[in-house]
Length: 437
Ligand code: ADP
Image 1 (spheres, protein in one colour):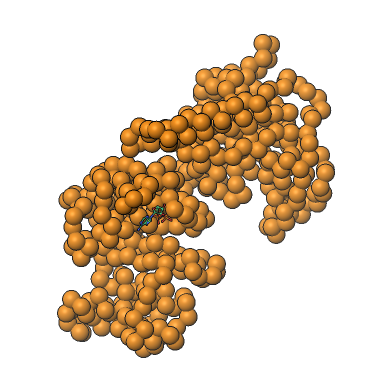
Image 2 (cartoon, rainbow, N blue to C red; image 1 turned 90 degrees about the vertical axis):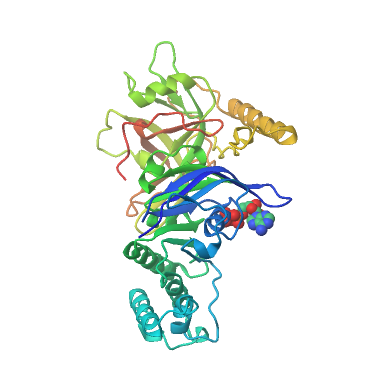
């Protein structure tokens, strides 16, 4: 059975280096399959290696099954780890490689044989057990490595980008095998990847990290529908969310509206619970997030009470087979994800140069946003849209033909807008409307 893993305010600073992890707290329940997701260098491997006992913990506590484990030797932790560049013993057969962790503990050879056979059968490699690693394909070698890691039946299974050296097809197949073998074993599994699609395919929950800071832990669906900030929103989902500089404002005689630069989206009155929150940020520079599902091409079907018209100019048509992605200009300014707010680091208040830099970054973000998002009046009949700014991506039926420069009438479901402040924090409370995914 899997162990519960609890991390309490765990931090890591390598000698002479920047902090690699900053006061990270996370509980992984027994038997859970958790994915650690984030860009390269955000501290995922460091965290995994700390749980395995291969890296010391600078600050904070690690508990395995309720007991403090900071200083436990790796061999006392009942964890097994697989790396990207796993190495098999070249002079041992696949069978000997898999059985090695049991053999070193001098287990009964008949029992070793039985366990090797059972691990190999689960991984579909019974027929290659007599071969040396040099006689195996990349996928087979990876399966042998998995067999070697699982044969001891560890209570914690740690995988560090185990499939990234394999081709896409094999990766997709092997990750399902990893998932099913983890489920069967009941081990608590932590799987590190920088690939959001892999994370979405695998995780019961996903922990998203950035610059050593945990951003959000949630189910794939929760992360997609309710991202805590603009970084998570843009990291999760293909095609990416469109982030556009905007504001919320209330004209004297009109409905409150979201301005996206040249065009506006009036909000339904009375405001929904979610939109009520937008009153608080009226007039502030904001980042408006539109997932492709929030926008559809206007057809003969009537707009619903939550849909608002918008016009887009087609910049680029991306044919994907099952669908076509249209990159459109809507007369707004595409926004970047704001930098991690260093002044908000959970470790200790930033001082000196770092704090100054953080303040400068935030004030720069504020001024550039303000400059870009001056609202124009509601009801502009022909929006001034410059082509080729490519700020909105919309899905279209691949059977329909679209061409560059075409003006396209769109409908935006305003319930699906994700609104972030200039620091990237999501403004809205949990929306009552979660898009059907
Ligand atoms: P990830 O797995 O997300 O790519 P890592 O945990 O490997 O990230 O690295 C996090 C940060 O710690 C990076 O800035 C990296 O350069 C640094 N780092 C990792 N290992 C060491 C080490 N042994 N010594 C010094 N710095 C390290």
